[in-house]
Image 1: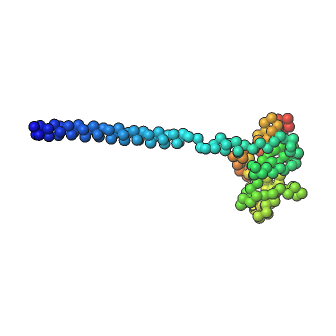
Image 2: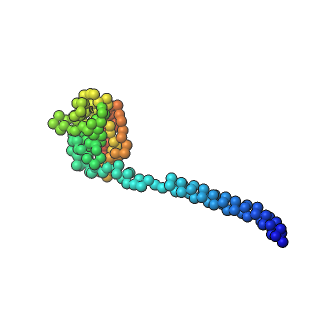
Length: 175
Ligand code: FES
């Protein structure tokens, strides 16, 4: 009788082992699927504050009438200068010197930006008047919508010279 029992047990053991193996394999697959799901969920998730970043980089500088021709206005929030040329065109200039990055203040009396670090100077369009600055002040794209000026501080534009095409006008003003 005991012999018969042992035989039955030994007949059952391989099937129990294969059942356990199947369970373990299923659990392994489940864990792998869960891991894949988590990775895709993480990758598909928007960065926190992504929407905020875009709204922060678009600076509403107010209506155009705020800016007289020939004026330079510092925008502290956007760290740029909004300059309005004598012909009414706008340009937004980075406040960083193109030599080694010092902040350049506008000298209203001398009508130029003068870098306090090594003495470079720039005119109202950002063009270099005196070196060592190797190129004009960088600029940001300007858009005028419904008489309101929007500056995109997320796109810094480097340039080798000042061109009139870099100025932005309201539709009423002819170029
Ligand atoms: S950092 Fe402006 S001149 Fe050197």
